[in-house]
Amino acid sequence: MIPARYAATRFPGKLMQDLNGKTVITRTYESALKTGLFEDVFVVTDSQIIYDEIIAQGGKAILSKTEHECGSDRIAEAVKDMDIDIVVNVQGDEPFTSKSSLEKVLKVFYGSDARQIDLASLMTPLHEKEEIENPNNVKVIVNQNNFALYFSRSPIPYHRDKEVEVTYYKHIGIYAFRKQAILDFYQLPMLTLEASEKIECIRYLEYGKNIKMVESEPMGVGIDTPEDLEKAKQILNKRGA
Image 1 (cartoon, rainbow, N blue to C red):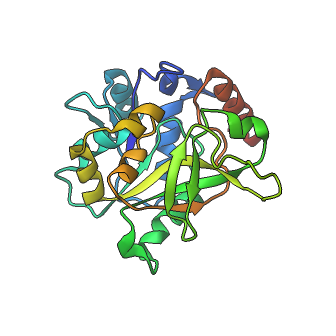
Image 2: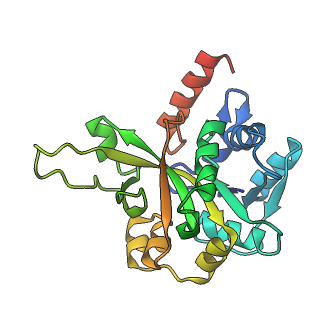
């Protein structure tokens, strides 16, 4: 499931921007489809424009019946009556989604601690000070078993003791949910921390759900700003795509 909202706050209409001859949302959809990992791939959207774009490209799309605050709510409505076990959420602004990353996030449901996992997601190390301090990069801290402790737009942890070596991790917006976890999420009201940070996965933590984090390689560029779009174009130019 690829949740796709037209009216993005930081970059309105970004999913319909041209990315070397195809829209951002079409490239994201095609990347997820090409992995061959899924029984079905859908774009779930509140926008007739995005819906029509995916259908015109021969893809599958679902038009949300009601207004939603976040992508998880949008997906929950769409999968409610589907006969499925695991739902994967690929953000609509991630056109460089890779098969290897998706395989990693799915693999945890077959691991030794699988029964403890309500959902799984990806993280990748951040090294540059500018990237660590950028509020568009959501950071995550984990326990020794790689279960998420907290997500923030601020640099976490605060590096007070400079003699202690710290690795900062960026959260990559790909999730794999047990169906029941995302249906539960849909019924739970937003609380203060999620509302403050505007990070939807915090809701799972606030209600005691377990999020398994998996370290992955960077996946190119997520499209949050016009500058990101230009970076994405440069990547595709180098690939000849």
